[in-house]
Length: 445
Image (cartoon, rainbow, N blue to C red; front, side, top):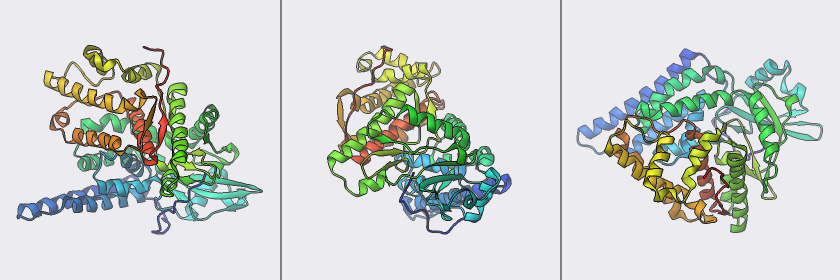
């Protein structure tokens, strides 16, 4: 594992606020400052001034990200997840939160040594021949150091202290802040936060992550153009994971070097096939599709990192979800509505008008998001297609009829599957890749 992305240059963080009361106070303070910024904004409007909404978003985004990055853990992970979806956040938030992907302020070396001694009874210099005192890569749950032993080079991921213990209380306070930022109601995000909470707790268990990493790497080796680091249980624990160090560029840095189209297509095809195999064959998939988790090595192979966030797809949900890839579904309104009811998107509690709005929007989304699968190949370099997706998301977020519906929509299983496909489409758009996109072979229909 490797990333050449420099982490924050604000200096190493000497400690993470770990007490429940002080973490809650820090988060509440960020929320209060957001509220003050809103009051200033609307106060200026009340006296006839026209303050720029972008200035408000920038002030709030800076305040929130600064607090989240210091607390790390759940708050920073939520920021990372939100940054993937351009429709959910104003641009200022997305730009700040995108830093959570691989440039969070690192922890100081003494805290790393403390974690090693707690896990192994030894410091890192007693286990490895060399160990970088400065983190090479820092993110929401942990940070990565480079180590050597003999002729071998390792990437060692060290979890931030106290992350697991503080998750539940952190998310309870983050939720109202997110509601205020996004302009949503509690019912809109409750299933989202429950699923996120469960997955974040999984991500803090590095023993499970190690097992999943080894399992999924072995079961996905046949995908062409993709490779994985080897993992080392003897140098791993519930809070530390050790794997191969692999040199490569994060996907966004790779794209910034302007590779030629055939190379973009090969890299895009490898990532597309990786997800196709895991979602439709294994039904257990890598659920954290941001550019920092995919490196491109010197041979233009894709190196897949970080299986901390994975999602198992139940067979019945897989059948119901991918029924929407059946091209005949849109031509059968009764069957289409029945499929929406199966996924808990339409319910008996809906008024006739609500049912109509939901179905109309679902039909538009099904056609648009299913479009790549119905042509055998697809050019994600077509900027108009990605723009159409973002426009649809923007219109949905501004649709007062949709926003006024009180019932949360959809099965919780769809949260990470939707996220995987949105992330996959975003990665393909970033690459501008042309890929073969045949529909998966489904025996259900």
